[in-house]
Amino acid sequence: MIQYVYKVRQIVYTQMKGEQMGKNLRLKAARALKDMSQKDLAETIGISRQTMNAIESGDYNPTIKLCIAICKALDKTLDELFWE
Image (cartoon, rainbow, N blue to C red):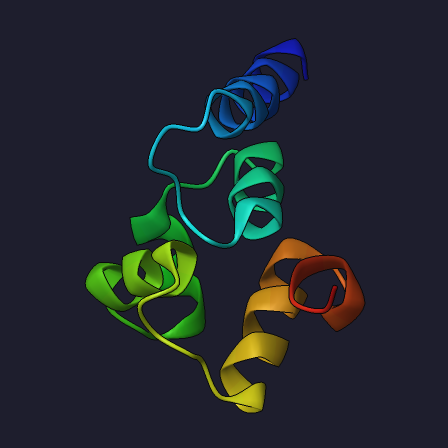
């Protein structure tokens, strides 16, 4: 668990420093807490790793069906991952 918390802290710290980060920090943090790579999550929900990367970086706007699949895989709600 400590390793996962470290990953989340590292993501947040990088964001706070103003470095180029993906648009969906909550999605990255949730994935890190599950100890899943982009490839792992992508395979779980049936998309490519490149699509998962584009979602996290804000270059691709996923459908509601895809958002729900991501939420189910990460045990999160739509509000927790996608809504402000």
